[in-house]
Length: 331
Image: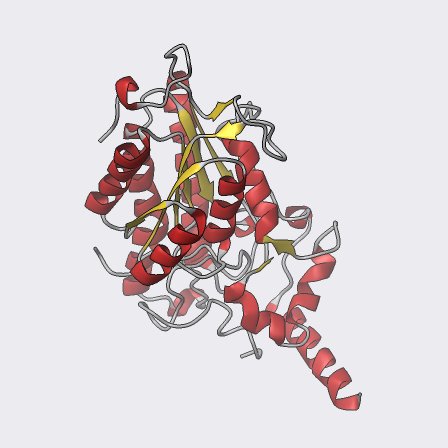
């Protein structure tokens, strides 16, 4: 095993020593999926402007940096890992003026993070329909409605195709296909006057990466569900889109970042010449959530052009690590 590759998903907590939530090899951290099984509103409950009209998506009474409008109520699921992608997205939404509900499985970190942002928080396991429904009700009860729903959860299983077990497939589909499906159902029910659904996908839903088939297949399938949501609910003013990062520098890829040569193996695959950041993804999420976004049913490839090329092979990553270690030894 190449040093730094086997543990790139993060610390074990749940299934087969893999990460507690989190994205696949590429993304960094889509955290806090929940590996064990754990109402819609009405116009009257939605925020209104001075004339009593329902405000959907963005209001125009504030002009924060970047969007030029004020995001309303946003749910971010997967924000219970310190400085993970979900938290970075939530911080950016807060900076843009959103009223937030941050959600995930870890109470202590959620409470700390919610206090930091002045946000509401809710414990939620994406594999539980009851908890997802309760999350939507929390947004309505605390903020009067829901305009933006972001799912950043995931589990980055790295396993050879023939070695992937039935239990791992069951866990993966529960987290990264069934879970998002249930998330969409719960959030759509809380958006009677429209809104924006945002799903974290992956560049590997389009391009290959070794030993990642279960993850990649679920991501690709969920992207197609996003298209279905966009098609069916567009007439209700609901947009649905995915964001597809590549390898991203986050707390969960810290081990890979600290292993000489791992990130170096990926950089040549990026036409823009650098690895992505969670801030790149957060900026895209803010745009997708804004009324300036006239797009639905699409996958926004926020990966520096990676999908124009390819991920490195295991042999190429190994060679890059060996070269970097040799250089260190000779220094």
